[in-house]
Image (cartoon, rainbow, N blue to C red; front, side, top):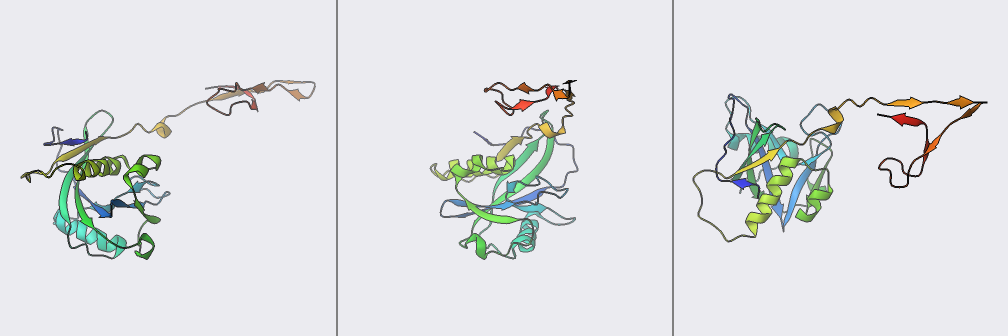
Length: 209
């Protein structure tokens, strides 16, 4: 459902490829809660470990370095799994990440987290109930689907997982106005309908957006 054999997006090079590690243990995935109040990619989201390549660095070298920097571990069985392409809301190419898969049999609380807030071993059915990076969620669903399918011949090129950026409703400027009516020292309030999406059955100032 998410996986395509080849990408069709138009890419305006140069772009800095990213890397990510999909680490598994007994059907669970290791997710990383990113810092919420920093100017970083997906603040406050659960995501895969990883980061961008540096100048002159291959993706293989980058993911090994990122894992050492973030959790201080070497994962010996890392292999390339998929390419993750992120598109913006209009469908234009935004970023590319090579995702590696590997295994790690260590409880989350025993892993030394050096960046971010928390690590968590997560089952696939929990992904959609969490504030998860859409790209990470797409990759995990693709991996879960792949793991439950008969093995196929290895392709020369990596499959591509495409995910489109969600619209960020927080970026919209919503201007509201409140009407304060006072008579003889009393303020007129209105009671919201019980089925109102915002603060149902509560008293409030008259307002409009």
